[in-house]
Image (cartoon, rainbow, N blue to C red):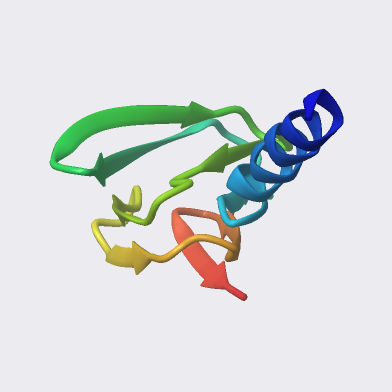
Length: 87
């Protein structure tokens, strides 16, 4: 029974991060994203050259240039000069 519970915990722990979006700042300056997830607004600062994992359950993101995008999770986003490329 303990092995089963440990397997379930490991499976769901790994799966929860698997659907989060990955954001990379390919620019030369840090950026701040406005993130709304489950009705909660927050700011995520990403230094130049750094990456962050956000939105494990989907969210809306406002980019530095004012564009707003919806994320479901699992996307890879690259930000450069305030604009984003979503894959």
